[in-house]
Image (tube, rainbow, N blue to C red):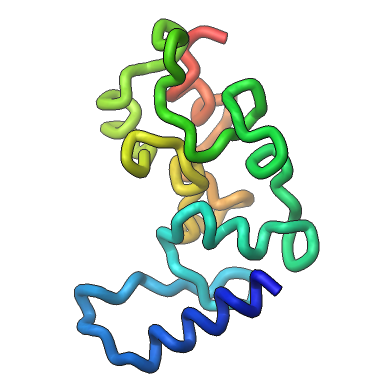
Length: 134
């Protein structure tokens, strides 16, 4: 149902003929055209366990005790010493949406690698960009 809604919204927006500067970059992703920098809600519209792999760690236990939390302020209050400063991670390519972690913080559909990670994660390179002390 969510997938159908997102597809309907995308088709409606495509037919409105918005100026190019207002149009989001579209990418082919597993057979669907999706917004390359979609907000988390766009990703979760398909990654619900029905249409695509379920990301329960983002939807069920969405906090910093789970592997990948979404829409939580970065760094978490009271735990700043365990995380690199926001300015440092942004300079390394991590994206924050209004100071919050989103799907696009770690994933970029433009990257062809498995999981579309924004950088390679050998020896936890991606993880350790933010997590300086576990």
